[in-house]
Amino acid sequence: MNHLRRVLGVVLALAACALNARAASDYRLVGYVAGWEAFPAIAAQPLTAVNFAFAHIDARSRVVLDQAGSAEFLARLRALKARNPRLKIIVSVGGWGADGFSDAAAGEQSRAMFADSAAALLVHSEVDGIDLDWEYPGLAGPGIRHRDQDRRNFTLLLAAMRARFDALARERGRHDPYLITAALADGEFVAHIELDRIHAYLDWINLMTYDFHNSLTPTTGHHAALTRSATSAASERSVAGAVAQFCAAGVPANKLVVGVPFYGRAFADVNAHNNGLDQPYGKYAGDHPWPELVEKYIGKDGYVRHWDDVAHEPYLWNAQRREFISYDDPQSLALKARYVTTHHLGGMMYWEQSQDPHGELVRVLSNNLR
Image (cartoon, rainbow, N blue to C red):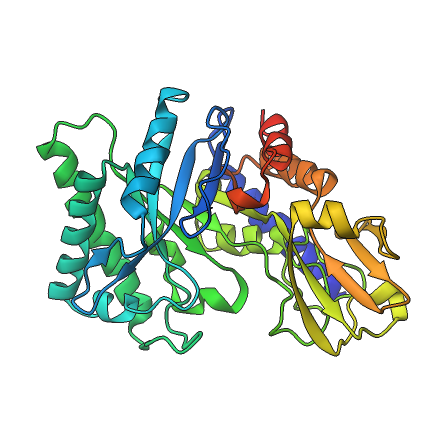
């Protein structure tokens, strides 16, 4: 009965979401690019936006490009517009462990400082928008400063940014508005976000629908499942669960951009039951980008690929080594893209470009979003 209630809740939330959706024929495809990696090969034509990761926040609540070589990296990203004039270049602020958001959002003066410095960055770096990756409002995370007031202050920060960016666009006679997006997680992470308010200030939301299982979780499992596996806990996170949660809060479907990982997560000393899926483990064994999975793991050296028909995800199990690896591949990515088009969502996002050097995974997303 509880399972039926959960299923019905998801269906009703998606139905409500669809009522707010446009008849989408032009889905967004957004890629993050890590500024600390070598500049990767990028197929500009199918992309809507490239998010440069990361800018940060200084002690005065100003947005700053503090990575070495950021200016040159952004110049090379802007050059991609020669191949795709509609491509948007966005600077992502924050990332895991990045501090400064709570202080910047805390008061009217600090919010103005943040918005003004972000606007100055737009002009100086000739980019099209700012993506906020605050991980996470109201939570200590990896030691970042946080406040109970972050929930309301995040909304006020976005409002200040929208007002400043719109004014800047008018001042510069810009036809297209400057973009504001945010990378957000689901589940307990939204307790400190006013989902019913913030979407008014955002052009779209990059759902971080991955890392559901990692070094901080007690069991193995699909780290980016489309739907929860049959053997998972009732609280298991999934793409469908995240979309339903955001839709139920009133976020329009066409502002939800589903995120996917181009890397896998590995676990060692795993309980052998159920081929290691949804089992306790001894230690976290690291991350593996897609090329490494193909070269060293999938179907090699005892790592057997399995397919979960319920979660719509592959996984690897090495019975001899008792190692489990969760990842996405072309089959699961195609199904997620079809889920996006079926529910008229806003598109898809991926982390991260250097992990798909030959463009195989981007092509899967692009082809299935048409």
